[in-house]
Image (cartoon, rainbow, N blue to C red; front, side, top):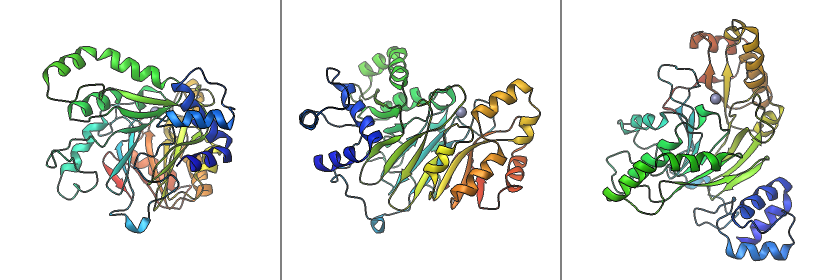
Length: 363
Ligand SMILES: [Zn+2]
């Protein structure tokens, strides 16, 4: 494991930077990242885990055989909304489920956990892992890894629910959270704000003590691999989203045993996304209505074009990425009906696409 880890670090400067930050974040007396091999070796003897985790107990570098998967890797859109109030659309959150075993959650918008109730219905019960203690209920202890694209509230309002509701439903460990600078502040703030609830439940409920209501945060500010286990390699890449600075807004690429998935995060037209998304099977991309945009006051049009992607721009992106499946998420409609969004895209793009709803499953 160690040798493989070091090989990866020597092979990619950005990966090395990310790994170093995670290590150094825990032991602040060491810096900068260009430590000698011997010091790094010593560090790795005592620090675990680091950003490149081996959570599943497999040897690093040993990948899961796709032929052994009990089900295809699935993408579940638990929340497809925006800051606007839209019927049936919770705050943005996307789950990638591998082998009906591990779940990787990307963003945690408001109310996204309610969508899990759909997966108690007949025919949909085999999407997520089964709760070991209460198989007849939805006890989402499997939501224990969260990757944040950026820190706009419509992507993080569900963090308190993820941390605290999951804990009350018998998650016995803190949620591991990866995100840009500021993520630690948000998570600490949530834990601080909810102390009355936490203290009350610690004293009264037969649930785990310690701090499983909390989150263990790894921050990063550059493109690179942020997580790896036997199922997936997860790579963050920078995107441009309004006034967020370089290294504060990200998309993610998830390379699973049987397919690759890219989630755009919130972004304007991004050449970096196009480069990172090439070869992806499923591209989930944010979108806004071009017709709706044209009806906004000029100052809002200016802001939106710097922060988001029009249907015409998305068609151009998809033509270059050539995904097997293009999925629109986070639709900004500006009063136009959803059908018009699909018509706009169909006018420029002839590949397969769909507009995701909460609870949709893509595989
Ligand atoms: Zn957003």
